[in-house]
Length: 366
Image (cartoon, rainbow, N blue to C red; front, side, top):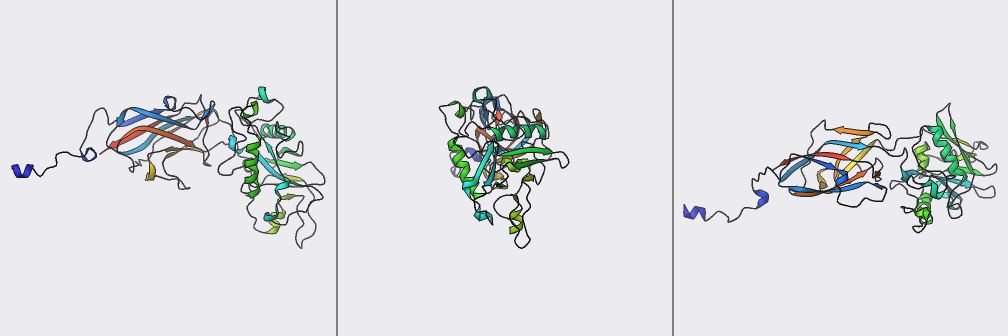
């Protein structure tokens, strides 16, 4: 017997032991964003929070999202999607014949100021991203944006060059070029010229020492390239066209149709689709230690769950688990949980600091 006992190891690794605790193995943990131990992203909004568990969870086997509540005091359009890009070709210019010919020198923008910008300090004559009640309300603000911009001397902007309207017959938003001799084309979100212009716009609107840089770093823009034009219903991506006639139809007046005669002279451009006044349909919740247990369609790991926001603006979206799907590729010991929120386009889902997010997690143990 003595020889047999000598063959046993002197210690047993904790991870392999059958550890049970009434204190350090909670079955359910509620996370309140107000209990974050990390400073918010800005003094106004935040898309992440970090919770330090007062009692660490030990020998964790799996985790799943049981319940969630999200208040929605957010704008209809995210601040990252508030810039409308378009081309204006003067009469003396050479018109393009295909996408690769689009000239960045003729690229201009109309923009809503980010929602956190204080109108009383910048000026109430400018347009701001806010909660819009309907298409007409949005069109009214767009025309303010087309008329005035606080950076009109330093950005690609022409005052009163275009006008927006609402067509009740088609229930769509309309853009009209105001120059009777110019040619207009709404730029797509994947236009290579837009990508370069975005960087320049952000730089030219970044003045941290002045009121225009108030709590921001220039005009925000979507990491996925989503533009205001796309939110308003113009869905041509700007990267390609199925043929030259398709490309010609993006212009007002249209470009000359090859072999088909003269262009159509209208400068009215009715959106291809209906404007989307939904900020996001889902909030994607990521935690840094879920790792390879899940991924989104872009291959990003750490996805705890996609929460449908089946509610209106300035309300509360609720989620309750319907199907059990525990995530098991996680570390066995947990003390800090960093939560990152994104919208359906992969941008940070920024909530005002007045919004209190609650997540309820369920744990199982080895």
